[in-house]
Length: 191
Image (cartoon, rainbow, N blue to C red):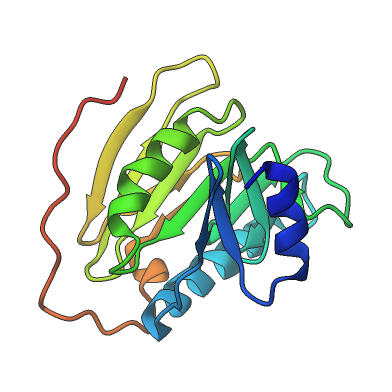
């Protein structure tokens, strides 16, 4: 499917689909835990953004990660001009994905690689759905190399552009985390 065909298809579809290099993937159903975590993040970031230059968008807004890749991140922060009738964000500053059992590997692999290639992006946060853990990928400015850190326990997550820190208590408020956790992600070099 071409990008143009995808965009036309998506306009009339009752379901949301992500698009990667000609392939179309239906968005999975989310759990109540996933939804609660995403709403906690959206609420806090939206309150901080207020009427400032940055805006916070959520799952229903599509992100163009490249000419051939379109995703629906859980949270997008944009600090620049956007038109209210736009349906696609092109210059995000921060992207957040809350994992699901069916998406954790993609969030930490394919999407990580795609988001790191977005010229305007300063941070990509992968929020674990099973335990208090946020994998933060960021760079100090658009010319700096990417860095990575894991925030766990009682830590805080720095969010650039809005210049705010989210505590893990805020992120996981109202969420009863199970004692069973997924295995740790494999370590890798961030270039």
